[in-house]
Amino acid sequence: MAFRHPVPWTVPLLALAAACSGDAEAPVETAAVRGERLYQNVCIACHNANPALDGSVGPAVAGASYELLEARVIHGVYPEGYTPKNAGGVMPKFPYLKDSIGDLAAYLAEAAEESG
Ligand code: HEC
Image (cartoon, rainbow, N blue to C red; front, side, top):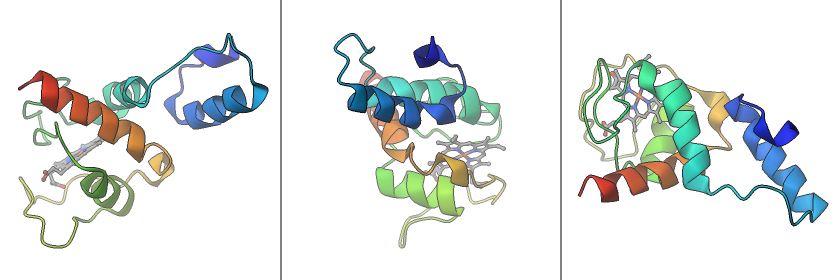
């Protein structure tokens, strides 16, 4: 029951709990699956539910690197030398997602592969 909690930012804690318990029956969740849930909860307010497409406000983000995600989502900036697809500066920061950047990167890498 605790492992099905819908609030995404509890997931890293639950994953840690599962890792520590050594319980072979703990559900196996890949980083991409966690990232997808997070993206579909938080990011699609502005980005497209299909990350390969532009959203209502935010640009396509499929294939976004860990470095880009960390800069944009946590710090509200861009990696040095990166040319933004859209430089409006509208996107807020989400510092509470600092432990989920790897999950988002895994999901967006997968989304880029699927879209070809
Ligand atoms: C409130 C609307 C909004 C939300 C919510 C939002 N974004 Fe954005 N995002 C934008 C906008 C608008 C841009 C374009 C730059 C700007 O205007 O800040 C952007 C740009 C980006 C970029 C840079 C794209 C590029 O290559 O230039 C990434 C990566 C990104 N967002 C990822 C995310 C992720 C991951 C989430 C969810 C955790 C998220 N965004 C949530 C609005 C949003």
